[in-house]
Image 1: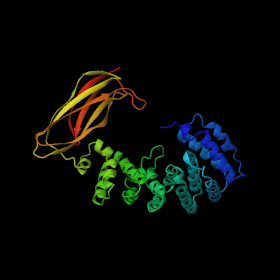
Image 2: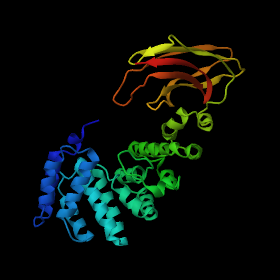
Image 3: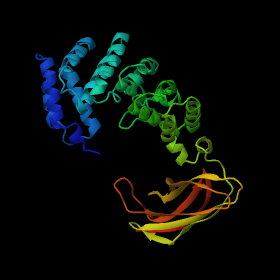
Image 4: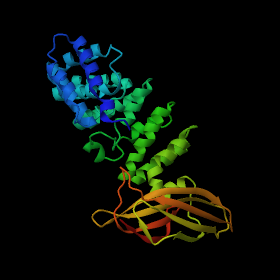
Length: 365
């Protein structure tokens, strides 16, 4: 992932200043000019907010005047990339603050015009927080757009847990309120759009996993050539969590298995080292068993509690009477995204959502 200064840095800010100055030559853009030199210590979203506020200060007046300036500026092809984030955020703030339906609707329209320059997905959250029903109604209309960027905006901008964005309480409080948008887009011609749909549906895994499965099941009943792949991507979290109905939807049913393991090569391990474990799995039933084999590492947290993280091991079909062996080397090397703490840990084997036992070990500093 690039650093913030590579996304919204001084060069992007100066380009924004130049294009706005060209579109509004009489405007006092001194605050925006000063903001160019104030980006240094700020994180990405804070940089976007700083430039947004500077834009709003430099372009006073009502929403209609502001929107005309932005549209004039957008005639310059350099108005693109990450500098679009503060522009779209300013449009949303200005439109919502005016508290008129005309400003609201035109502001949403302007986001649709700009989204192809990078994305308007963050700015739409302002409209959703102000009037979720109206914003979702417009987003549903966007699903029929001939522009794939606008169709993607309908899905991506309304995600319950869109990364880097503010939450929308009205969406979180009504799980599934955005599903009609996804129903219109899951068979979209564009992989760019379909991937957003899969990620959007996966977001529901956190709060309403059954909704994820019901939607996926409905889509599989009316599929196109891409639906199976989309559904597998959308189900990735509920599958990792061992949701039985999700596993069954992909053909992983309860199986009659005899499992030896998981077996570890050590009882104590130092942070930074790796542990090797293995298991033998025998199909003692009379039918072939399609199995999704995962393992869960239960970690000691900083407060002494425990938390589990699921990792995919393999998927196989085991014939009646057949035995397969599985093994994995799991590293406990500290990463920037993962820190380990001394104490008891364990590895649990999970097959088709069913736990087949676990083995404990101690991690030492």
